[in-house]
Length: 248
Image 1 (cartoon, rainbow, N blue to C red):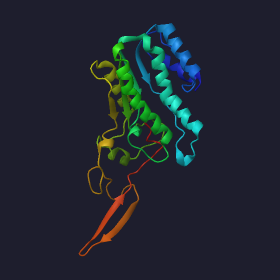
Image 2 (image 1 turned 60 degrees about the vertical axis):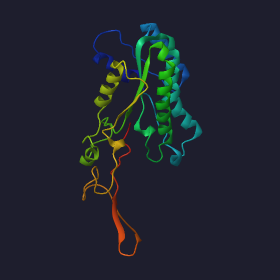
Image 3 (image 1 turned 60 degrees about the horizontal axis):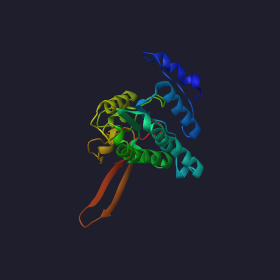
Image 4 (image 1 turned 90 degrees about the horizontal axis):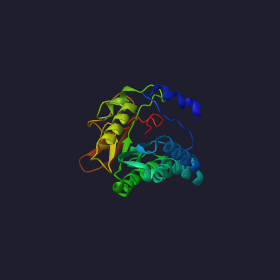
């Protein structure tokens, strides 16, 4: 990402004294340069949000050892290094929020690199919360579900219908969660799932949350197990899944 593509955001921020830097979170020298510049400009850290991650998909796409570890460097090693570099410069009462994902606990095929990074970041969150407690620093994480970033086209009505909350998430939902964690002095070592209830929903044919007949999804007839007086016949409908839009 070019510096010019992000620097203009400073004009939208209120007040003065903002700092914009660009670099590769998977490169140690870039992370160290960022930390040095932050401390040079501000002297201390009150809030740290670790949001960077990439994906090289997974085993079905032939994600290589090098590619897999690149994802881990960006998504796990960089947040750890920043915490290490800022350890003695956090203000008491500081808050760290790691942006994890529901992919840490539920998966689609061919997502090993991203899922592994987010799972590790979730574990890193509660480990850091214990280590940084003596410094007066709280560490939490947010796990987004399906968030519509506006980059993946128009969503279908079924995309909203399958969520217990009745809609797909928005970036503002995640921002509000981060602000809550930063402002709540008693919440610590927690992973806040923001996914509209999707990861808690049990979906069966004809049950709540199922896709109504005649909409999107291929219907497969599963027939089997003929017993003495009856046979089991059920219909299974695939919930529409748009992997490019389901980005958390």
